Image (cartoon, rainbow, N blue to C red; front, side, top):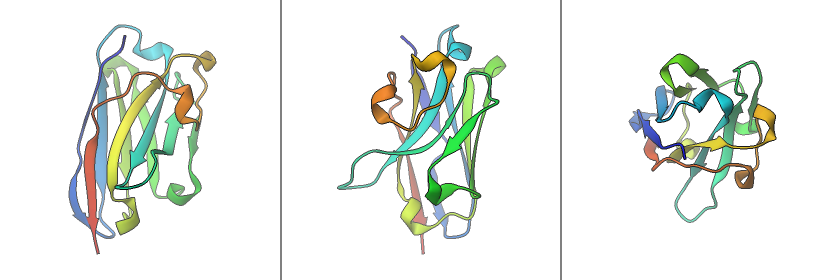
Length: 126
């Protein structure tokens, strides 16, 4: 079982930037595709971005394309989400998660992901 810990959230003005980090325990980090999801109050958890186990393939939800970048450093057991040009609608709790199957390919489906972190709050003020 992989344990994940997110960090880097906070309060930022619209147009600003934040970089989220998610560090995993365990030696099998590089076996998993990884994803970032978010959940705003009263809404369902939604997909943000995902990356393959090698880092060569990434996918994004349309609303963050061109603004967010997902990356990973397997030597550090860490996945990142660089968020630029933030908007108030990006406000949510952000979670990282591992995808235990799928041969290391990314997915946008919540159901494909297993271990989840505790989340980090991102608040964007207008």
